Picture 1 (spheres, rainbow, N blue to C red):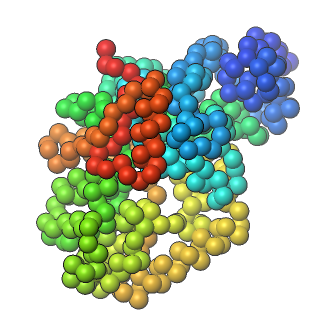
Picture 2: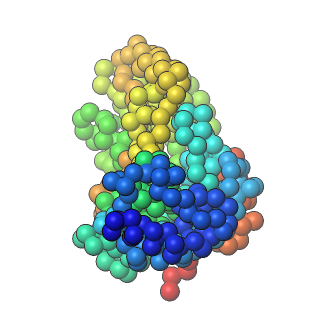
Picture 3: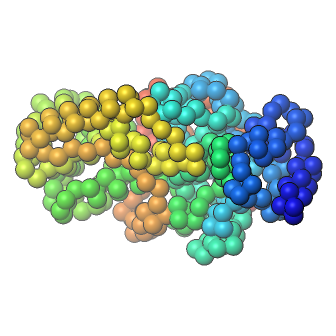
Length: 410
């Protein structure tokens, strides 16, 4: 009975429109929140939020978002509910700068909607990478304090949609978070301290690209010192190049104007980091017996996609079986082609890691990693944001990362 009374008190106290994603889910503006049994919950699984959490759901923030799958010309900046602490290890960060990666504009355009049997919950907030200052911490957060300058690559569990199925109310309150917002929520283990020597704009340009390169290098079996590493169209991925240049390699080849097969001696490449989807055309360049190809731009296997961080969400989206089997077959074909050249091929998903960010911070501080910031636009200048994101979408962004300034340092 105490449980039911508590539930009734919470329901009757929070009928304001858009106080939370649950209110939006329940219906149009002004509608009452649906009873727990209408949401598909059970009394045993319903975990009521503490009063302070419910109160904070009334706060709003500016966020770059989409109301449906859209190209950059339809992006909007609007007021949406601010994130609140949910788990004891959650951290709320006030964002000063965020960066846009190609994956951000592809996700917004619905790149995964055919592969994943689970639609995005709209409005969907855009962005993975950001830098800012810790605003609030959960009771079990040990690494960070309020006021710490940090940078983040938001994991999918933070980016994910609200889970309106048979899950706890705590999970229901986990509205999706995008880096191009005034505030973000992220678990402690995915956050790193910002390099002191970098501005927030510079720090925001690092996480996704540099962590991708770092994790790709670690897939090579053996020591890469003195090896030949090839990154096709490397100038379009400046942060990866800077990591690679400083990871003890002595020879990195970057050919963007000529066909690499005409100018690189065949059988001389030890490690190919494929960022443009050309790995199968370059198999003749790989050194037989000990070389490795890691791709982030072809297609993963269906099983790999299902088990990837993209699916690490409370509602566990699933890939349709025929699509999954088709991806598995294509992946086996690529591996078989690589085997003919006595090399190893694999696709890689990035895993967000605070430890990786701390390692990158050390590289920055000793001069082994330098950032390349391209254009910088303000979040509230929506026309400039649309134009800049459109350039990224077209693939003609040039050298440097697009950074969106959200707050100016105080």
